[in-house]
Structures are given as C-alpha cells and as structure tokens.
Image (cartoon, rainbow, N blue to C red; front, side, top):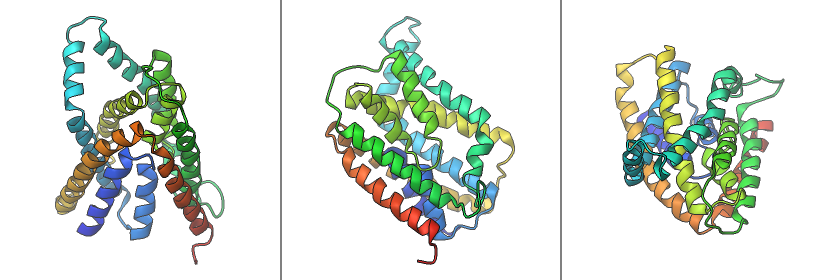
Length: 274
C-alpha cells in the first residue's frame, strides 16, 4: 500500500468512525476506488491500526468524562458513574454475541460472489447505506428531551450496535438514532454512543491480535504509522464536530449523503462498466 493510500484511508476511517456514514462501508468503497491489493493479513492489520487510532481519539475527546467515570467506579458504590458504566457493559452484550457467532458470515459479506452470482460488497454496502439514511432521517425529526439513557435503552442501543457490524450500517448513526428515537436527550445519546464503543474496539483489537491471523511486517511500519496518524487526527476533528451536529439536529444532511452514496454504490456495483 502506498503512503498516499494510507493517508486517504486513515482520513476516511477517522471521519466516518464518528460521522454517521459507516466507517466499514466507506473503507470498503475507498479500497475499491484505490484498487487496494493488500493481502488479507495486511488488510486486517491496517484495519486494526486504524481502529486503535480512532479509539484513542475518542479517549482524548472524552478524557474528562472517562476520568470521572473511573473515579466514581472505584468508589465501589452504586453511584451515577457506576450505573453509567453498567449500562455500557450491558450495551456490549449483543455485539459480543454477534461477534462470536456470526464472525465468518460478516467476513463473507466482504467477499465477491459470497452470497449469490453477481454479488459484490459494493452493492451490499450501498443497500446498507440506504438503511442508515432512513435511520438518520427519522432521528433528525425526533423532539428534544432531557431524558437519560436507561438500562433497557442501553440494551436496545447495544442491539443496534450489533446490527451495525454489517458493512454500510453506521455504528454511530445506528446507536445515536436508536437512542434519540427512544426519547433520549440528543447530546447524552451522542456521549453514550461514543463512550460505549471504546471497550468494544479494544476488545476487537485484542481478539484479532490473539487470533494469530495478523502477521507483523516491519516493511509496512511506515505506512501503518502514516495511516494511524491520519485516522487519529481526523478522528479528533470528527468526534468533536459530531457532538455539535447532533445537538443542532443536523443529521438529515448525513441522511441525504448516505442516500446519494448508497445509490451510486448500487448502480456502480450492478453496472461496473459505467
């Protein structure tokens, strides 16, 4: 992979991890456009590095919140911080189950002709982006409230996060939209959505590292570092920006974007010669 490709894919991952447009879907589209020829191991390692970068950017943006949660947690009391952490743990259950039971199926969705003749990942991503567009449009029309995320809400939001493992379904878009449609405050919904993904990302990274599927290659160290830096910096910008956009009910713009990109992906997938 060339350095410029690493920068572009890093920027794509950094922005789309937080903006509700599907990071996995855009990474696949980006790789297709750039003609990425990386081996499976190299591609997985690069993806892990990018996810690590965006997880760190989330921790930097929410460093004060994380510190307050940790202090409250180690008071060993059923306080507000402990309750919040408990809700995050509950939200992780669905995605852990999906990851353990459906990992091979999810990987097959990114393989050409894996489901039926003529299938390509680009087509699937396109249809899932249309689903993301509908979710964002509905959430944008929801009324403002001051309701906090409940335990039941955290489980339902966790289910939406599990569904968002499908490439093309935005994780942040699905979780924030679900939270808002459940009647929760928009800023609290965004905060919960971004904090709940941190342990999930680190869990996935640990799983990939222990799987033995990732092989180290010192020749790609420079490319990996460049991709990491691009994803980290763009992640910082996107995370801060997204919080403001949710508060101002600007999700409809992303709904339109996902609709347009989704339709283009479907057309290109069915008619690649265009």
